[in-house]
Length: 196
Image (cartoon, rainbow, N blue to C red):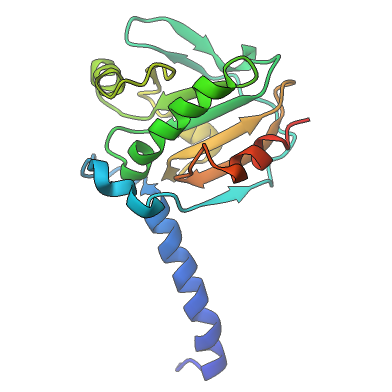
């Protein structure tokens, strides 16, 4: 059945939005084990910082997920209460993830005592790869937490990386953000102020 001119006018903006979302995050297709690594110029003009905020899970409690670092140290997500938590799910093969990591590192440095910034790698292979990836770029405020079984992606029903989930100090979700974001801009300040 052919589309009417009205249907076409409605469909074109929807295709534009879908395209922007695809540009803003890495698709989590299991049949494709890795996407090409981003170059340093990938974030020029904030091309990698396109995303979507979702407040539909507001009030949900932090799930009982546990992550490990390459040395075996354990991080229990549900115990991270007392101050707001920004949980970022990323991967070394995801260009928008790589583009936003320096911004997350800066945010963690600036907000230090007022905000917990936790980055969790969804890479399926090797904690040493994640650890060397972060240290080689000089990210002093981001730890190499690992989720090799993708338990977080399953729990949050994530299909796009990066995805960032924000919790208030009591451990209740405020919002989640799918796609890359500049975590050092003025909009971020307003977004973080939503945790009361």
